[in-house]
Length: 97
Image 1 (cartoon, rainbow, N blue to C red):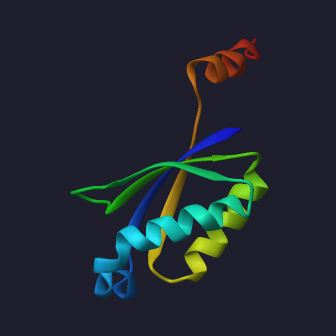
Image 2 (cartoon, rainbow, N blue to C red; image 1 turned 180 degrees about the horizontal axis):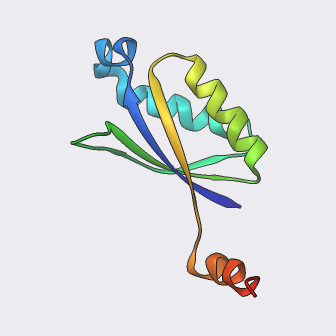
Image 3 (tube, rainbow, N blue to C red; image 1 turned 90 degrees about the horizontal axis):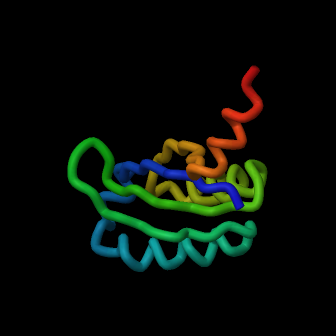
């Protein structure tokens, strides 16, 4: 499974109903499962981003489909970073000449 770090910010719609954010996080976790993804962790944060979410997905296409479905709800805008473990980056670096 690939790991992604998702940085999210509430939209105007999302912040207006911020009291429901924990409930929406549970709904997002269920939505993720439908795409073969798993929300491993979610953090509500202070600073430039409102949320940081760790997601595992079987491939980029599954993760992208989940991201599109999540975004279409209109509560958050996201940026995703593909994260590599020490072993994974070792395999990447091993391919260098």
